[in-house]
Length: 428
Image 1 (cartoon, rainbow, N blue to C red):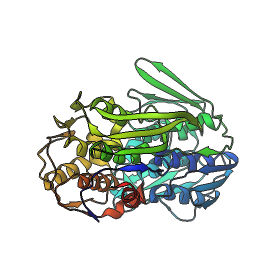
Image 2 (image 1 turned 30 degrees about the vertical axis):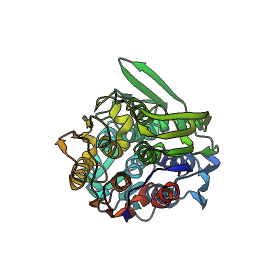
Image 3 (image 1 turned 90 degrees about the horizontal axis):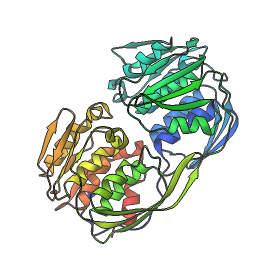
Image 4 (image 1 turned 90 degrees about the vertical axis):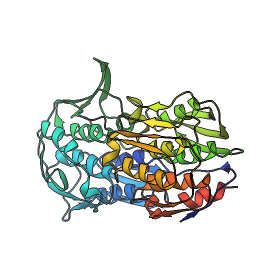
């Protein structure tokens, strides 16, 4: 994919549905009692992997474009699959469904593609075993065999700040006798808690000892309801940064999810002098949404270091924030982001290598990097099969000197299938 420099981004663009919420909607609607209609479902490869896994477990689902109708099987209505469940490239599918399957009355094997099979599963296997789950894995990676067994309610503290691990445990808690509590020292995205509440689960949240204690009852039953999926703020981030870095841009992105655990990107942009505002704020299916409006230009930079509790809030936006840092007066430094080492690729290494290919000075650390300001030079960029790397460096190409080539641009199918068409529609 060839990217040429642009003057600005102008117009209104409707973005695809939120990836995290689409995963959870497919799983929870499948174990609710009755039919649910999911609108603006993200029809990208990862979310379709989740939907296919639920169908393989006996759930009846039909998709028409971005609308999915699911006839919920009820909490104990899932059925054993004669074949392994293929999670594709989706870590969210593999980790969340492990919790869902741990308390079933049958055994299931999970597999994935080459990339997913290298990613760590012990982060969910260990805490699931604290609930009495029986799981077999080699070296803590896929393939994984989940042996469905009765689970015991317990209190589990998260070892890493991970919404996937938290969600996995809450799903398992639906099948445990008594009440299961997940202790979260650093808050991560709370889409699972919100959707549990939307579908009628017995869930409560208490702040105690500087940590969130999320408790779900094993007596909970989910009641089917329609679910409206907001536009994905992580997809919006690429376009927001592109518009900010191109003077004269004027871009509107309607119906974007504004979950408080996901809007760190907006705070970073504002503190770097970018004119971004929220209009028409409202709520849909338990999630806050609104329209984002952004004007081109970067004003005074108030922060350089991104670290600590902010990192889980912006973990998916870090690749594009690295690109953003090239255009900031003082660059940008990101620390405490070692989680990026075990994403679809080693994102820290991929970011550093590609920035250097574009003649940008950057220091690499175990847990992050420091980006120095400068105009990127067009270069040949490797996506490493990672959707967020491909999109981030496509944006860099918009304000680079000369043409940029993105190798492996098809990785965008994972979260934003029409990314390049969408970009082309607003470039001027």
